[in-house]
Length: 118
Ligand SMILES: Nc1ncnc2c1ncn2[C@@H]1O[C@H](COP(=O)(O)OP(=O)(O)OP(=O)(O)O)[C@@H](O)[C@H]1O
Ligand SMILES: [Mg+2]
Image (cartoon, rainbow, N blue to C red; front, side, top):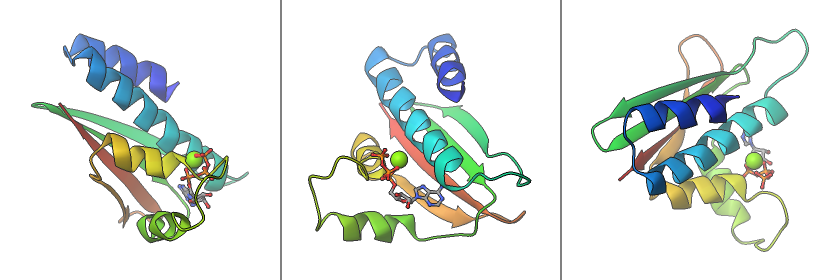
């Protein structure tokens, strides 16, 4: 769903196709993670915010689970390599030239963000 909206918005705003493809992947990886690891019955739904700037696109996905240093987790996992899963955030890092991160949210939980440039 978020991926569909992102695709439409990107098209409307004249984002070039190459960047639209990267944006679709980033949005889908971050939203999938929020739903898979930070969503449970009775907890608030994860939220996705999309901001289009000049030659850049900011994706922010909020979820209610406490802040975790996902960047450190990904760097650490690199040692293991070649696994079937655990590639999503490494892909996000690649598609954004490493412009991504996690921050604690003022309303609790955390925001995973990523910036695609073109
Ligand atoms: N929003 C989140 N909240 C809590 N933990 C998370 C969140 N997103 C990712 N993680 C943790 O970081 C790990 C790495 O995430 P990543 O997306 O790279 O791999 P994956 O989801 O396990 O596999 P893949 O994305 O390849 O299907 C996850 O296994 C999970 O433990
Ligand atoms: Mg993932």
